[in-house]
Amino acid sequence: MLRGFYTAAAGMLSQQRRTEMLSNNLANANTPGYKSDQSVTRAFPEMLLSRMDSESIPTKNSLSFQTSSPIGSIHTGAYIQELVPLFSQGDIRETGLATDAALVEENMPINEETGLKSSLLFAVQTGEGGLRYTRNGRFTINVAGELTLAGNRVLSSTGQPIRLNSDQFKMTENGLILSEEGGQVAQIDVRFAEDVRELVKEGNGLYRTENRDLPSAIGLQDVAYQLKQGFIERSNVDISKAYTDMMTSYRSFEANQKVLQAYDKSMDKAVNEIGRIG
Image 1 (cartoon, helix red, strand yellow):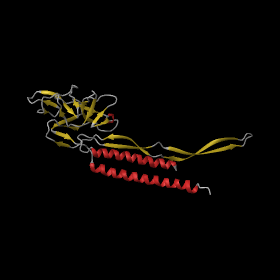
Image 2 (cartoon, rainbow, N blue to C red):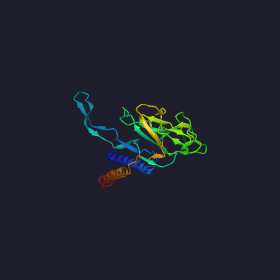
Image 3 (cartoon, one colour):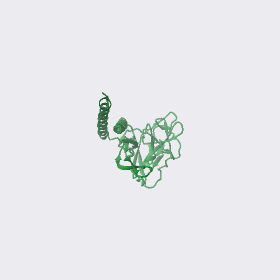
Image 4 (tube, rainbow, N blue to C red):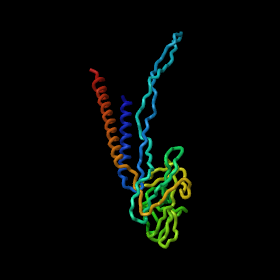
Protein backbone atom coordinates (compact mmCIF):
# COMPACT_ATOMS: atom_id res chain seq x y z
CA MET A 1 0.00 0.00 0.00
CA LEU A 2 2.69 2.49 1.00
CA ARG A 3 4.72 1.58 -2.07
CA GLY A 4 1.75 2.66 -4.19
CA PHE A 5 1.80 6.04 -2.42
CA TYR A 6 5.46 6.55 -3.30
CA THR A 7 5.03 5.41 -6.91
CA ALA A 8 2.10 7.77 -7.57
CA ALA A 9 3.84 10.67 -5.80
CA ALA A 10 7.01 10.09 -7.85
CA GLY A 11 4.94 10.26 -11.04
CA MET A 12 3.35 13.54 -9.93
CA LEU A 13 6.75 15.10 -9.14
CA SER A 14 8.14 14.01 -12.51
CA GLN A 15 5.24 15.54 -14.42
CA GLN A 16 5.41 18.72 -12.36
CA ARG A 17 9.07 19.20 -13.23
CA ARG A 18 8.36 18.41 -16.90
CA THR A 19 5.58 21.02 -16.92
CA GLU A 20 7.98 23.60 -15.46
CA MET A 21 10.50 22.78 -18.20
CA LEU A 22 7.87 23.17 -20.95
CA SER A 23 6.68 26.45 -19.41
CA ASN A 24 10.25 27.76 -19.50
CA ASN A 25 10.56 26.74 -23.16
CA LEU A 26 7.37 28.60 -24.04
CA ALA A 27 8.48 31.67 -22.08
CA ASN A 28 11.68 31.77 -24.18
CA ALA A 29 10.03 31.10 -27.53
CA ASN A 30 11.00 34.61 -28.69
CA THR A 31 14.47 34.69 -27.10
CA PRO A 32 17.17 34.84 -29.81
CA GLY A 33 19.36 31.74 -29.93
CA TYR A 34 17.48 29.93 -27.14
CA LYS A 35 17.74 26.13 -27.25
CA SER A 36 14.74 24.26 -25.90
CA ASP A 37 15.15 21.69 -23.13
CA GLN A 38 14.11 18.07 -23.30
CA SER A 39 13.54 15.87 -20.27
CA VAL A 40 15.04 12.41 -19.77
CA THR A 41 12.76 10.26 -17.58
CA ARG A 42 14.02 7.08 -15.95
CA ALA A 43 12.58 4.50 -13.58
CA PHE A 44 13.91 4.07 -10.09
CA PRO A 45 16.02 0.91 -9.64
CA GLU A 46 14.05 -2.29 -10.09
CA MET A 47 13.65 -4.43 -6.96
CA LEU A 48 13.38 -8.22 -6.81
CA LEU A 49 10.74 -9.51 -4.40
CA SER A 50 11.34 -12.78 -2.59
CA ARG A 51 9.30 -14.81 -0.10
CA MET A 52 11.22 -15.48 3.09
CA ASP A 53 10.68 -18.84 4.81
CA SER A 54 12.48 -21.27 7.08
CA GLU A 55 13.01 -25.01 7.07
CA SER A 56 13.87 -27.30 9.95
CA ILE A 57 16.26 -30.23 9.88
CA PRO A 58 15.10 -33.23 11.97
CA THR A 59 18.17 -33.45 14.14
CA LYS A 60 18.73 -33.71 17.84
CA ASN A 61 19.11 -29.94 18.24
CA SER A 62 16.29 -29.05 15.75
CA LEU A 63 18.37 -26.94 13.38
CA SER A 64 16.56 -24.50 11.09
CA PHE A 65 17.75 -22.25 8.26
CA GLN A 66 16.30 -19.39 6.23
CA THR A 67 15.14 -19.92 2.66
CA SER A 68 13.83 -17.54 0.01
CA SER A 69 11.76 -18.06 -3.12
CA PRO A 70 11.75 -15.38 -5.85
CA ILE A 71 8.34 -13.87 -6.50
CA GLY A 72 9.14 -11.32 -9.20
CA SER A 73 10.38 -7.81 -9.83
CA ILE A 74 8.72 -4.48 -9.07
CA HIS A 75 9.40 -0.90 -10.11
CA THR A 76 9.17 1.97 -7.63
CA GLY A 77 8.23 4.89 -9.86
CA ALA A 78 9.88 7.30 -12.28
CA TYR A 79 11.87 10.51 -12.04
CA ILE A 80 13.34 13.23 -14.27
CA GLN A 81 17.01 12.32 -14.50
CA GLU A 82 18.21 15.41 -16.40
CA LEU A 83 17.25 18.22 -18.76
CA VAL A 84 19.07 18.16 -22.10
CA PRO A 85 19.12 21.18 -24.47
CA LEU A 86 18.22 20.47 -28.10
CA PHE A 87 20.93 22.09 -30.24
CA SER A 88 19.11 22.23 -33.56
CA GLN A 89 19.31 25.29 -35.80
CA GLY A 90 16.65 27.93 -35.17
CA ASP A 91 14.98 30.02 -37.86
CA ILE A 92 16.95 32.99 -39.19
CA ARG A 93 15.16 36.36 -39.11
CA GLU A 94 16.34 39.63 -40.63
CA THR A 95 16.56 42.65 -38.31
CA GLY A 96 18.56 45.15 -40.35
CA LEU A 97 20.75 46.03 -37.33
CA ALA A 98 24.47 46.02 -38.09
CA THR A 99 25.32 44.71 -34.62
CA ASP A 100 23.12 41.61 -34.98
CA ALA A 101 24.77 38.40 -36.16
CA ALA A 102 23.25 34.98 -36.84
CA LEU A 103 25.43 31.88 -36.64
CA VAL A 104 24.34 29.52 -39.42
CA GLU A 105 25.66 25.96 -39.33
CA GLU A 106 26.20 24.45 -42.77
CA ASN A 107 28.18 21.27 -42.15
CA MET A 108 28.65 19.82 -38.67
CA PRO A 109 30.18 16.44 -37.77
CA ILE A 110 28.31 13.84 -35.74
CA ASN A 111 29.82 12.77 -32.44
CA GLU A 112 30.67 9.07 -32.77
CA GLU A 113 30.16 8.35 -29.08
CA THR A 114 26.78 10.02 -28.58
CA GLY A 115 25.38 10.05 -32.11
CA LEU A 116 24.48 13.73 -31.62
CA LYS A 117 25.42 16.54 -33.97
CA SER A 118 28.10 18.89 -32.71
CA SER A 119 27.36 22.61 -32.36
CA LEU A 120 28.90 26.08 -32.67
CA LEU A 121 28.68 29.00 -30.24
CA PHE A 122 29.94 32.53 -29.74
CA ALA A 123 32.51 33.09 -26.98
CA VAL A 124 31.87 35.91 -24.48
CA GLN A 125 33.65 37.14 -21.36
CA THR A 126 31.65 37.89 -18.21
CA GLY A 127 32.28 40.84 -15.91
CA GLU A 128 34.21 38.51 -13.58
CA GLY A 129 36.46 37.40 -16.43
CA GLY A 130 34.89 33.97 -16.91
CA LEU A 131 34.46 32.39 -20.33
CA ARG A 132 30.91 31.60 -21.44
CA TYR A 133 29.24 30.53 -24.68
CA THR A 134 26.00 31.55 -26.39
CA ARG A 135 23.98 31.32 -29.60
CA ASN A 136 22.37 34.70 -29.02
CA GLY A 137 23.76 37.11 -31.62
CA ARG A 138 21.85 40.22 -30.54
CA PHE A 139 24.99 42.26 -29.83
CA THR A 140 25.31 45.91 -28.80
CA ILE A 141 28.17 48.39 -28.40
CA ASN A 142 28.81 49.69 -24.87
CA VAL A 143 30.15 53.11 -23.86
CA ALA A 144 33.72 51.80 -24.13
CA GLY A 145 33.16 50.88 -27.78
CA GLU A 146 33.20 47.12 -27.07
CA LEU A 147 30.91 44.64 -28.78
CA THR A 148 28.83 43.09 -25.99
CA LEU A 149 25.93 40.77 -25.25
CA ALA A 150 23.89 41.76 -22.18
CA GLY A 151 27.00 43.25 -20.58
CA ASN A 152 29.30 40.36 -21.54
CA ARG A 153 32.12 41.21 -23.95
CA VAL A 154 32.19 39.33 -27.24
CA LEU A 155 35.62 37.83 -27.85
CA SER A 156 37.71 37.85 -31.01
CA SER A 157 39.75 34.96 -32.42
CA THR A 158 42.72 36.26 -30.36
CA GLY A 159 40.72 36.01 -27.12
CA GLN A 160 40.41 39.78 -26.72
CA PRO A 161 37.30 42.02 -26.60
CA ILE A 162 36.28 43.55 -29.93
CA ARG A 163 36.52 47.36 -29.92
CA LEU A 164 34.71 49.43 -32.53
CA ASN A 165 34.57 53.14 -33.27
CA SER A 166 30.92 53.03 -34.38
CA ASP A 167 28.21 50.69 -35.59
CA GLN A 168 29.10 51.49 -39.17
CA PHE A 169 31.05 48.32 -39.86
CA LYS A 170 30.80 45.29 -42.12
CA MET A 171 30.92 41.66 -41.12
CA THR A 172 31.96 38.97 -43.57
CA GLU A 173 30.59 35.43 -43.64
CA ASN A 174 33.64 34.08 -41.81
CA GLY A 175 33.30 36.63 -39.01
CA LEU A 176 35.83 39.27 -40.10
CA ILE A 177 34.81 42.75 -38.93
CA LEU A 178 35.79 45.56 -41.30
CA SER A 179 35.75 49.21 -40.30
CA GLU A 180 33.95 51.92 -42.24
CA GLU A 181 37.21 52.62 -44.08
CA GLY A 182 37.62 48.95 -45.00
CA GLY A 183 40.35 48.00 -42.52
CA GLN A 184 40.17 44.72 -40.61
CA VAL A 185 39.32 45.26 -36.94
CA ALA A 186 39.00 41.71 -35.61
CA GLN A 187 37.44 38.33 -36.27
CA ILE A 188 34.55 37.08 -34.12
CA ASP A 189 35.53 33.88 -32.38
CA VAL A 190 33.30 30.85 -32.90
CA ARG A 191 33.79 27.87 -30.60
CA PHE A 192 33.25 24.22 -31.48
CA ALA A 193 31.36 21.88 -29.11
CA GLU A 194 32.06 18.35 -30.27
CA ASP A 195 30.00 16.86 -27.43
CA VAL A 196 27.04 19.11 -26.61
CA ARG A 197 26.58 17.25 -23.31
CA GLU A 198 29.56 19.24 -21.99
CA LEU A 199 27.51 22.44 -22.12
CA VAL A 200 25.77 23.48 -18.92
CA LYS A 201 23.01 26.10 -19.01
CA GLU A 202 23.51 29.12 -16.76
CA GLY A 203 20.53 31.25 -17.77
CA ASN A 204 20.31 34.37 -19.97
CA GLY A 205 21.28 32.24 -22.96
CA LEU A 206 24.74 31.44 -21.58
CA TYR A 207 26.50 28.08 -21.29
CA ARG A 208 29.64 27.00 -19.46
CA THR A 209 31.88 23.94 -19.49
CA GLU A 210 33.15 22.15 -16.41
CA ASN A 211 36.47 20.60 -17.40
CA ARG A 212 37.90 22.44 -20.40
CA ASP A 213 37.34 25.42 -22.67
CA LEU A 214 35.83 24.75 -26.07
CA PRO A 215 38.30 24.97 -28.99
CA SER A 216 37.92 27.55 -31.73
CA ALA A 217 36.05 26.40 -34.84
CA ILE A 218 38.03 28.70 -37.14
CA GLY A 219 39.96 26.60 -39.63
CA LEU A 220 38.61 23.24 -38.44
CA GLN A 221 38.11 20.59 -41.10
CA ASP A 222 34.61 19.14 -41.63
CA VAL A 223 33.12 22.27 -39.99
CA ALA A 224 31.39 24.81 -42.22
CA TYR A 225 29.41 27.84 -41.07
CA GLN A 226 28.71 31.45 -41.90
CA LEU A 227 27.81 34.61 -40.01
CA LYS A 228 24.98 36.73 -41.36
CA GLN A 229 25.09 40.40 -40.37
CA GLY A 230 21.75 42.05 -39.75
CA PHE A 231 20.08 38.73 -38.87
CA ILE A 232 19.41 36.83 -35.64
CA GLU A 233 18.74 33.19 -34.94
CA ARG A 234 15.39 32.65 -33.33
CA SER A 235 14.74 30.02 -30.66
CA ASN A 236 14.17 26.44 -31.79
CA VAL A 237 11.10 26.00 -29.58
CA ASP A 238 8.25 24.24 -31.38
CA ILE A 239 5.33 26.09 -29.78
CA SER A 240 2.56 23.76 -30.95
CA LYS A 241 4.47 20.66 -29.80
CA ALA A 242 5.28 22.30 -26.45
CA TYR A 243 1.58 23.02 -25.83
CA THR A 244 0.66 19.44 -26.74
CA ASP A 245 3.34 18.01 -24.47
CA MET A 246 2.18 20.27 -21.66
CA MET A 247 -1.39 18.99 -21.92
CA THR A 248 -0.12 15.39 -21.94
CA SER A 249 1.99 16.07 -18.87
CA TYR A 250 -0.96 17.70 -17.10
CA ARG A 251 -3.23 14.70 -17.82
CA SER A 252 -0.57 12.33 -16.54
CA PHE A 253 -0.25 14.42 -13.37
CA GLU A 254 -4.03 14.21 -12.86
CA ALA A 255 -4.01 10.42 -13.35
CA ASN A 256 -1.32 9.94 -10.71
CA GLN A 257 -3.23 12.30 -8.42
CA LYS A 258 -6.39 10.16 -8.67
CA VAL A 259 -4.37 7.02 -7.92
CA LEU A 260 -2.97 8.74 -4.83
CA GLN A 261 -6.48 9.73 -3.73
CA ALA A 262 -7.68 6.14 -4.18
CA TYR A 263 -4.84 4.86 -2.00
CA ASP A 264 -5.70 7.51 0.60
CA LYS A 265 -9.33 6.36 0.76
CA SER A 266 -8.23 2.74 1.12
CA MET A 267 -5.89 3.64 3.98
CA ASP A 268 -8.67 5.65 5.62
CA LYS A 269 -10.99 2.61 5.59
CA ALA A 270 -8.23 0.30 6.81
CA VAL A 271 -7.53 2.55 9.80
CA ASN A 272 -11.01 3.79 10.74
CA GLU A 273 -13.27 0.86 9.77
CA ILE A 274 -11.43 -2.44 9.35
CA GLY A 275 -9.07 -1.79 12.22
CA ARG A 276 -11.81 -0.60 14.62
CA ILE A 277 -12.20 -2.61 17.79
CA GLY A 278 -15.76 -2.92 18.99
